[in-house]
Image 1: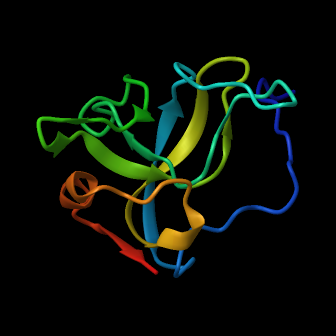
Image 2: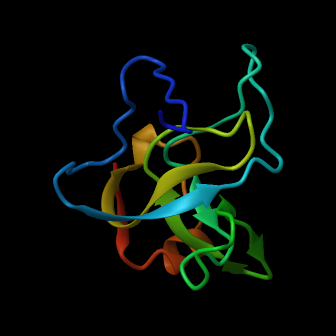
Length: 123
């Protein structure tokens, strides 16, 4: 019996412009600061730009990227919606990809674009 519970919310949201060309790493997505939706679920949406030092240290939690004094700590983009209702949860963070900018929750800032050197956002 698996210790993970998988919940399906309908069709998978596809944020990739070219779904057969990407590189993703496994991360643990933090539940800190995530607000519950009307169903009481805390969902971090696909396309959220993540940081938190997870590339250098895989024991750290992936958190929403922040920008301080013109520099972003962005490291990648969340590939799939991730349910963090019960606490931090496993997810996949894109570190190389072509992403449809119209399908992510928030357009990347200039600082995030600079930090995400191997990710291209396409209209």
